[in-house]
Length: 422
Ligand SMILES: *[C@@H]1O[C@H](CO)[C@@H](O)[C@H](O)[C@H]1NC(C)=O
Ligand SMILES: *[C@@H]1O[C@H](CO)[C@@H](O)[C@H](O)[C@H]1NC(C)=O
Ligand SMILES: *[C@@H]1O[C@H](CO)[C@@H](O)[C@H](O)[C@H]1NC(C)=O
Ligand SMILES: *[C@@H]1O[C@H](CO)[C@@H](O)[C@H](O)[C@H]1NC(C)=O
Ligand SMILES: *[C@@H]1O[C@H](CO)[C@@H](O)[C@H](O)[C@H]1NC(C)=O
Ligand SMILES: *[C@@H]1O[C@H](CO)[C@@H](O)[C@H](O)[C@H]1NC(C)=O
Ligand SMILES: *[C@@H]1O[C@H](CO)[C@@H](O)[C@H](O)[C@H]1NC(C)=O
Image (cartoon, rainbow, N blue to C red; front, side, top):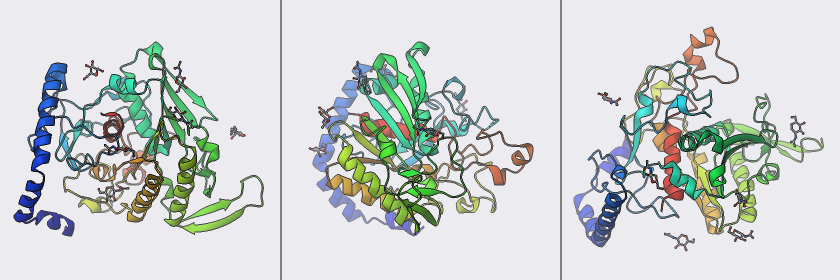
C-alpha cells in the first residue's frame, strides 16, 4: 500500500524535467522505431505484435542490449499479465512429446484453462516473439544447460516444448548421463543441446540423486561443487537457480566428505548458509568459466501460493481453485524473502566486478501475480495422489511448481530476449 501511493505521487514538474532531459533519447527511439517498422514490414507481416494500447511506446519490438535487459527505456520484468487467447499458449500440452507428468495439468484433469492464455506485457515495450528456429540458430554447435532444482527443470521442460515442435522426430533425441543427473535434449541438425543438470542446492549435498533425494536429514557440503560443475562449466549458456531447498530456518553443513567419516558438521542459520553456497559457486565460476564463450544467467526465486489470505482469498485455503491472476500491482506474498534476494544481488555484483557478467532473470515479481497457474492436484509426482488426498486439496495441492504451458514459458521468453535477442 505505502509503496504504491509513493510511486503514485510523482509531481509534474519533475516529469517535465525528465522529459526535457530525454528529448534527444525520444528522437533516437523514434528513429529506431521507424527503422524497426521498415524492417518488420519487409520481413513478414506475421511479426507484428498484438498491442493492448495501454502503453505509449510499445509499437516496435524492443532491441535489448546483450549485457542487460534493464535499460532506461524498458524493464522487461516490470509489467502486467494480459489475457491473450490468440497468441497463447505457445504450444499444446498434449503435443509436447517431452512433457513432464508433474506439470501436465490437463492430462491430470484440470478443466479451467485460462492460465494458458496470459501474455506478459512489460510496461513500455513488448517482449520479442519467441521463434524456435531463431533460437536454434543461436544455439548451433552449442550447449544450453539449466542447473538447479525442480523449478529450473520445469523451465527446461518448457524450453524443450517450445522448440521441439520445430524439429522432425528423427532429428531430436533424449538421453540421461552421469547417474541421471544430466538430461540432454539433442537437436542433430543444429548440433545443439538443451540440457538439465540436477543440483538443487548448487553445491554438493546428500540430495544430489535426481530421483532418490527425499531424505529426513539434509546435509550440504558447503564448499564442494566440483562433482557437479565439471559436467557443465564449458557450456555456452548456463541458467542457474536455487532457492526452494533452502527454505528452512537452518541447514546442516559439512566440511569434509560424506564417506570419510571425520568431517566437521555444523548447523548454520539462513540466509548465511545460502550466502556461503553462492560464495562457493561464485568462486568456481570466476575461475572456470570462459568469459568470452559462456553466458551466465541466474533465475531469482519462484514464489509459492500457499496462503489464500495473502491475496484476500478464503482464509485457510491455498492456490487450489484459483482461476485468475492477482491484479494488484506490486503484490508480494509472505515468502518473498528479501534476505535471499539480497544475497543473490550481492553475489552477482561481486562476480560482475570480477569481469564475469551474470544476467539476473528476475522472475519473482511477475510470477507472484500467478496464483492460479500451479498444478494443485492436477499432476502426478512420485506416485498418483490417492482418492483421499484428491478429496483434500488444501493439504495436497502443489502451489510451488507451474503447469505447462504456462508461466515458465514466459521465463524462457525473457531468457530469449535477454540472451539471444540482438
Ligand atoms: C557490454 O559489456 C562489455 C564488456 O563488459 C562492454 O565493452 C560493452 O560496452 C557493453 N555493452 C553495452 C551495450 O553495455
Ligand atoms: C478468446 O476469449 C474470448 C473471451 O473469453 C472468447 O470470446 C473467444 O471465443 C476466445 N477465442 C478463442 C480462439 O478461444
Ligand atoms: C522465425 O524466424 C525465421 C527466420 O529465422 C522466419 O523464417 C520465420 O518466419 C519465423 N517464424 C515465426 C513464427 O515468426
Ligand atoms: C557440436 O557441438 C559441440 C558443443 O556442444 C562442439 O564441441 C562440437 O565441436 C560440435 N561439432 C561440430 C561438428 O561442430
Ligand atoms: C551412481 O549411483 C549409484 C547408486 O546411487 C552409486 O553407487 C554410484 O557411485 C554412482 N556413480 C557415480 C559416478 O556417481
Ligand atoms: C574461450 O572461448 C573462446 C571462444 O570459444 C576460445 O576462443 C578460447 O580459446 C577460450 N579460452 C580458453 C582459455 O579456453
Ligand atoms: C528483482 O526485482 C525486484 C523488484 O521486482 C527487486 O526488489 C529485487 O531486488 C530484484 N532482485 C535481484 C536479484 O535483482
